[in-house]
Length: 95
Image (cartoon, rainbow, N blue to C red; front, top):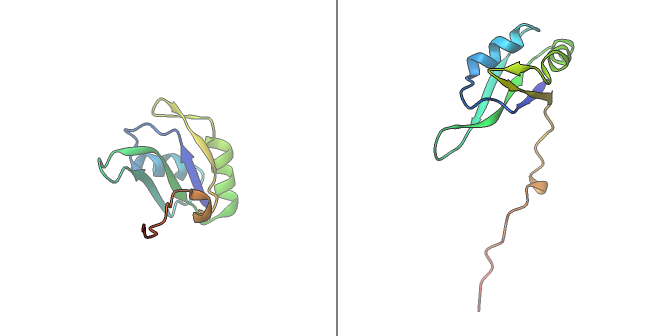
């Protein structure tokens, strides 16, 4: 299961996430999303746990709990839907 973790401290490292989630089971991967220009954390990340029950236990056990002084938000990650991202102004020709 892919798990979204929000409201992270900008000082939180991937190893901190791994340690918090490993208390509930096997962690396959962790990823903290960084700003592409500054390289600084954007305050959220993802944890991949292969076992569904362990992942659900981690979500229940960590949602709203403090990690490095911040109450984190933890829930199942929703698949990214590019159609809902807005944006695109097109590149049509001007005559």
